[in-house]
Image 1: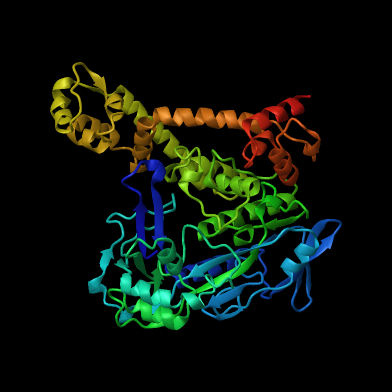
Image 2: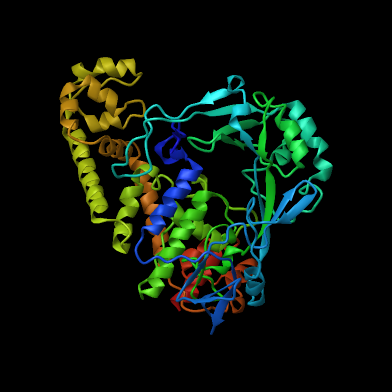
Amino acid sequence: MIQFRMLNRSKGPAMWSPRAQSDRMRFAEAWRMTLEQTPNVDFWQEGVTGLLIEHDACVGVRTALGIEFRSKTVVLTNGTFLNGLIHIGEKNFGGGRAAEKNSHGISEQLIELGFEVGRMKTGTPPRVDGRSLDYSKMEVQDGDANPSRFSYLDTPPLTGQRPCYITYTNERVHEILKEGFEKSPMFQGRIKGLGPRYCPSVEDKINRFADKDRHQIFVEPEGWSTVECYVNGFSSSLPEDVQYRALREIAGFEKAKMFRPGYAIEYDFFPPTQLTNTLETKPLRNLWLAGQINGTTGYEEAACQGLMAGINAHQRVVGKQPFVLRRDEAYIGVLIDDLINKGTEEPYRMFTSRAEHRILLRQDNADLRLTPLGHALGLASDERLARVRQKEADTAAVLHVLSTFAIEPATINGFLTERGSAEIHEKTRALNLLRRPNIELNDLAATLPALAEQLVAFSAEAQEQAIIQTKYETYLQKEQQQAQRMRELENFVIQGRLNYGAMPALSHEAREKLLKIQPETLGQASRISGVSPADVSVLMVYLGR
């Protein structure tokens, strides 16, 4: 990690989001070393060109050299490589990523087997030489003064951080970029795939938001020791000379040297309504798809799908039950449920706003929600589970202290007046004061030494949990009740394939969508776009019969 920032601190805890800038080369090396030191993992480096299919099941893969690897399960994580086509201005060439060739054969075979396929597009910005930039003309964006971490174990805290920088495009930059529009593969129709709505290219931004005279640019170092910088916000597929001239008009980039231009990449994806909730394909048993092949964009989105597909491929091999996360258990559950029920017309990105239970799905309680599940799968150690249990116990103990510590009016009213909060006229428990939006535990403890003395034995994590649970108690209870009602719908299991076309009481759209997706539960059916509450009632009656 080269920088850590907790985003959205000005909003409620459900919106807090940890973000890391990582050294790309060290990150890749660390993962490779981890894999190579894992017992019983073998490696073969070669392109796969086809799948081995027997009796409607995938039983292995075939490589470009014609070697066949037989397997009980197969997971495809092809990213942007399936028939990948890179665009830079009027030039285009095959590739899955800069300097890496694309992959042929898998898409064609899946189409022959009856799979639906589509095209999507994503882009990347230019990389520049950091030594050629004038950072004095940019705004510094430092990491957090007290950086946190992603791990709940004793990961060493970050002691040093590299800054990022913020600068802006301007009207001259926009003018130069517009000169290249006639050679833009996106505007001239050479790119057929849809790009990500929330990370548009710079040419798309100045076209769609013509009233804006500038757009923000983040200058991000690629690592500790490299001079290469990532120009976040300047994703482009315009000709390289246009990109270069426009870049040099940005404040701080007047003498910029480019490592390589930005480009767009167009690639095959398979609409995810063809998947079950474990990410196994419906047409073929024992084949899982994960990542951008399912129409998502973003590292986290890809990583969580790889994790879930890998878990379920393993569960199948060893004869165990599938593992599925619900929408009220994890953002992973929201993402997969959205994909398989609603599909996606554009690269899908996960946002907190997509989750109806986001107060339950906070980053601070991820360990409490998911470590017991990981431990049951064999993915989390006994040590990790013990730490979670200790955190739960400590949080309960902090809540007990707060609910029993009585405060006299004379000792607290001065503090309350300073905070613009109503005075108290009789003894009040600390918990009741903490429920007020403008009262924080640290301030209470600083004002009341006896309270601070009782809390000193508990970790900051446990105290934070107690604060959040206290302040959001009513909202948490409401979301838990809603989640329970949804779980009751999930208990209505739909056995086998139903002929929804023969249910005239359903709306025409509902029949069409249900026939295509074939949901596994009534809860899943209720979340399909186009299936109304009235349609769900009809299904409930039908299933009851």
